[in-house]
Structure formats: structure tokens, C-alpha cells
Image (cartoon, rainbow, N blue to C red):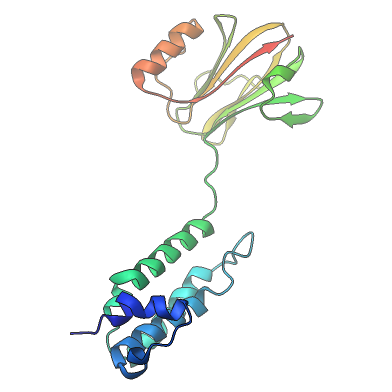
Length: 222
């Protein structure tokens, strides 16, 4: 049976800079304290870099695991019991999340004007702007409506560059909004639910029935 003093109060006393005679004389608590120090030393400056260096996770785990072969089994602190284990577990999980690269957007809608891509800013749309909408999934599609009527349905079955072109496994539109009016754009982040309805109201009703939440944009071209 291992001593749980370090879990219960030893770590808190150490963090507060208070002396702890029990830990100095208890081999179990000394093992827990040494393991804690290994973890904090291994974490070092990780998180200070905008993009963590490749392989940092393996370096951290290697430093923590290295003493295991030459020492007896770690205390319950390292197994996750008590405050110390919870803190380390949370730190490791947070660092792994930070180290991950952001997932690419599966669907996007942008305005192209004067050679520059302008995201958002629906009020800035003017006649002659290009609707750059992408659905980067197999079976994906982009539906564009002007007023209430379907203007373009771009899918793998309706490829017609440059207005509708392939984009990897998905499709991409480059439709010039050359007429004033209200536009609605729907870009799917998963396979489209069949053919595009003839009106935007029917399209919205279909999305509600299917429980789908694709990327959408609604704007006026003046």
C-alpha cells in the first residue's frame, strides 16, 4: 500500500513553498514528488511557441517514462489519483490539443473583388464580384440562388469550368454576380441531400428536414 500524503496535501504545500517534513522522510512521497518534478521539467516551455516543434510530445513522454525501468512502481499520484494526477492529466491533454493542426474547412464562401478575397462583409457586395464557394467533400455541392430561384447547382455531376469546377474530392464555384438582387449560397460540408430544389425556400425546408447545417451566406448585390 502506498502513502497518499503527497496526493492529499504534499503537492499543495510544495506549490505554496511550505516545508513538509513528512515528504522528506517518506520514500513513497519522495517518489511522487520526483515524478511531479520530472513532468514539470519535461513540459518546460511548450506552449510558448506559435507552432510547437515536431516531436515535442514524444520528448515529453520519453522524459517522464525514462526512470520507470530503474525505479519501483510509481505512486497513485502518477496513476491519476488525487490533485497531482488530475493536474498532470489536464496539462498533458491541453498540450496535445494545442499541438494539433487545425482541421481544414470542409465548406467555405468568400467574395472575390479586384483580385482580393474578402471574407464576410455581406454589405460590400457589388455587381461584378465573384462568388467563390467550396465544398471539399466527396459528394458535396454548392447551391446558389438569386431572388428565390436556383441560379447554379454545382456538384460532381455538373462540372462546367470555370463556373463550376472540381476542387480535390469536392467542387468549387467561380460565379460572377453580375446582376443586382438578393443571393443565397449554400456550401455543403458533407454529401449533398440529392438535387438542388428550384427555390431557396424549398432548399431551406429540405435542410431543416434533413437536420443539416451547411455553410450559408445571404447578401444583396447593388
